[in-house]
Structure formats: C-alpha cells, structure tokens
Image 1 (cartoon, rainbow, N blue to C red):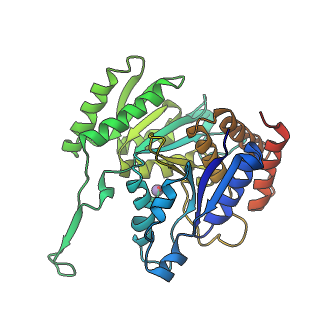
Image 2 (tube, rainbow, N blue to C red):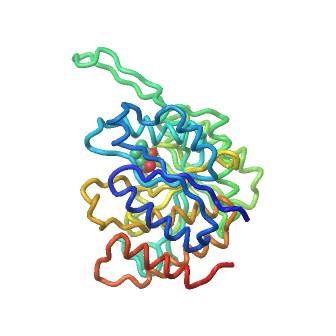
Image 3 (cartoon, rainbow, N blue to C red):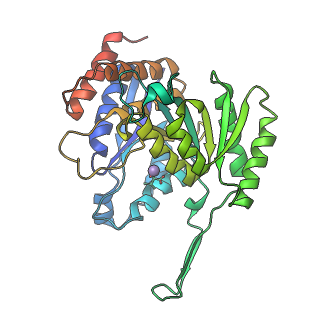
Length: 352
Ligand code: IPM
Ligand code: MN
C-alpha cells in the first residue's frame, strides 16, 4: 500500500511534545516506508508573526493529505478565542468535520476517580458522537450597547435538519456496529424546545432505519449525574456541539484523566482529511518539561488509522497503549519514555 500521508500540526504548549510520540507509534506500526509526514507550523507563534491564525493557502495544502494529526492549540499570549476560532474551529468547520468522536474506555490498571467496582461493575466503554459544525459554535450572535448597563449579548445555537440528521445517522451506524447497540440522545428539550424537538424527531425517524439499536434520552444535566453514578449504562451518546464539549471533559475524567482522552474530527467523505487530536489543551504550565502524558495523542493516532481503514494497525496501537497502561507503576515517566515504551511494544509485535 502507498504510505499514509499526514499533515502534522503540533501547535502550542505540549502539543508538539505529544504529537512527536504519536508519530513514533505510527512509524512503529506502519514502518518507516508506511508513513509520510509534513509539519505545519501553526499556532501562537505564527499568529504573532503574521497576524493570521491560518495564513492564506495553508488550508488548501492541508486538504491534500490523508489526515491531520493535531497536538493542541492555545496560548496565554493570544487573546481568548483568536486561535480557537481562527484555527481550530476554522479547520473543523471548513473541512466539515461534523462527527466529533470521543471514546471513553476505562483500561485495566487505570484508576478512575469513581468507585468503579460499585458504579460500573461491568466496566466503562462508551463513545460520545458530538456534533462538530453547528450549535452555539457557529459564531451566530452579537452584542449591543457593549459596556453599558443595557448591554445585550446573544449566542445563537444553530441546528439544521441536514446537520442533525447526518450526525444522528452516523451515530446510529456506530451504535449498530457495537455490541450493546444502544444510543442515548443527550439534550435539554424541556427548555431548548425548538432544537430539542428537532433532535428528538430526527433520532426517532432515523432510528427507524436501525431497528436493532435501542434508544433512550437524557437531559444534559441528568446525563452528568449518570456519567458519575452509572457510566456503565452508556454505549453511544449523540449530542450537540456544546453539550458534547462539556460531557467529554467529564467523560475524560471518568476514564482516568484527560491525559488519556482521544478524539477524532471526522468528515466521513474520504476525499477530505479528518483531524485527530487529544481532547486536552496546550497545558502551558506543563510545556517544555517533557512531563505531559502522550497517551491521548497516541490513542488519537489509533483513531486516525481506524478511520483510514487500517483497522488491524489501529487495534495494535490501542493494544500497545492498553498494555502500557496496565503496567504503569507508581513511578513517573517522561513524555518520551512513555512514547518509546509504546513504540517498542509495537515494533516487537511485528508488522503484517
Ligand atoms: C475541545 C476544546 C475546543 C472546543 C475549544 C478549544 C475551541 O475545548 O476540543 O473540546 O470547545 O471544541
Ligand atoms: Mn473541550
């Protein structure tokens, strides 16, 4: 097979440190000839130098790759929202990454802050299918009379039938392919009635195409309770962009920490590169010390392989991570020690 061609955006803070380890894992599992990478310097430094978060032409270059591996974006020296909106969300929106996939699996040996034996005796293994291009993230809003006592700010949540339906169908297909075949819609239809009605109706209608999948519903506030008191009940959760943002941080914590939480921003159209990134941010307080956990980035690389149809290799990476997690002692290892240990396991298992 021709090599996988990926664009690498290390980004800010610990981003480049963790993507370097994810690349080690990819090289170990694909072989030197199986992977081709191009680095894109984007993030705070480029913004300071050029005044642009995503300089002209870069998006077209990114489009030519099979996938994008991203570390983290964001730096305290840049005003809030500039890089988030101008770079990260810009990529998700312009590449139409409407499926924001965020799995949570409590791996053996990993300590959850929950008393798992009592709240999830059968384990924790669910995936949040978060909408990635709509909701309150579109920038549809405005402010009036700013700085006066009469100031008004609106932030409108955009929910289109097209956008909700394509996401919900993807979530059902993922539920159908899993063992428990259960889909939970998370929303807040008792208050957000217009969008809630659209989401509920869409789940009901698309659900008719998937008779083997059972569906249920939780309000977002109640979902946070169940995520901590009974996370074993979840299989596939489908939800909007903002609710999905919030519950996937909670899910990350439940799964043993945000350092392990991987994500995929997927456009199922294979002609457009999907983007794979840890759920965590740039963690400026940890940057440059070589102490960030690269596991989330490595698991994101596994999602990348799975998306590109390299399922055997994806499984091998996940297994190597699981084996590493199962054998983590009390001592702390550096970022590259963790990456090296996982890459070594992958080289040892050989290539197919
Ligand atoms: C995430 C992040 C982003 C989001 C921010 C940085 C724009 O929190 O990937 O979860 O809200 O989606
Ligand atoms: Mn988030």
